[in-house]
Image (cartoon, rainbow, N blue to C red; front, side, top):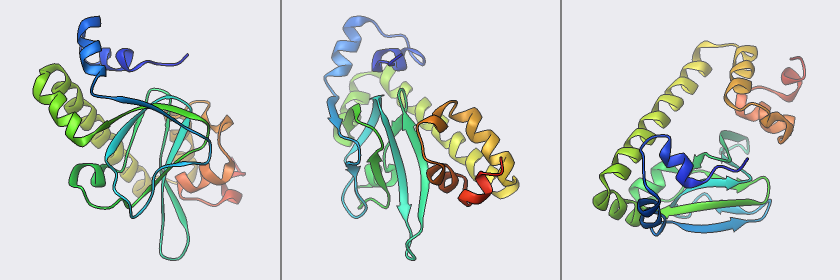
Length: 185
């Protein structure tokens, strides 16, 4: 079932239908076809994206041509180049739609205005930021302290059933292992 933005926000703060209508004005609803980029390395990431339907991937291509997958975002999840969005510098990651994708997006300027006008949304975005920091810290520790099988098992817990929507090459890249190693699990 497709999660709406209102349902997502309501998991953190209670908002009325009237409040949601005011909040929604700060967002643009857009769609993107499979294979298209919503953020490209070297360009500016002026939006954060909330996925309504579909699947997107954030990745970084290093100097020797190896692609590192940083994040998958599916229905009910957020994705962006956080550094570019918050600082105005050029993006260091690509975000590509792996399926036809529908999403809400909010610009930095609109997010700031929304937080100024709504303490509930300021609280929501602070909680979301804290949750993301915890997630990234856990991912770093998992890479530093766990073997490939443990990383794969954690991946399945974090993204149940997503393996049905992804290639094994993409999963292996996310886990920092080879396709051959992944096939052993």
